[in-house]
Length: 199
Image 1 (cartoon, rainbow, N blue to C red):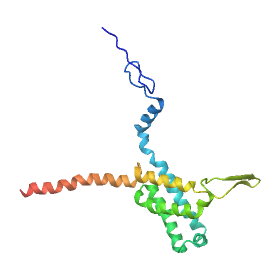
Image 2: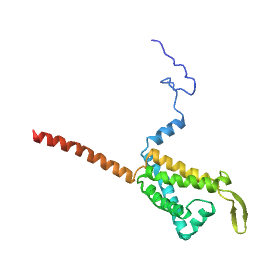
Image 3: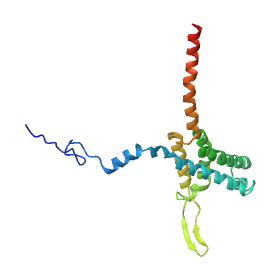
């Protein structure tokens, strides 16, 4: 009886029993997380921060008075500042609530992304990428410079992930999808039952 030896496979350590490359700790970690029941909850932090963040900005604009934000838009030479101001507030509050509840997220993401792009181009673009610019620390506290477009891109990335990957559990979209799956077999079964009865 001959003893068979396995040659190591180039590119990584091998197992002495199979001769196949041994998985690295990184591969094991990825497999463990992707197969874990926790992985399905990944969209939840995105929904919470995006939904709450948009609603917070919308209510903050209302708290400053109905004319404050349109005045800012007028100073930026935005056309129809009053109309655009109220539309922005509406998108931030209603869109934020939709994302928070996981309701029609792909549809709600369109006007929300438009608001982010307008803000990034008209307000934040001249100040560069970073949204946190620590200038100095004085007796009054930390002093920051004008924010860049970093936060706008983070919100856009979160919206894209939710629109393309789904809203995750505890979402109205998922509840409606399950309801459609339950009612679809019933709607297909009714005509066949009626056909058998007519024969």
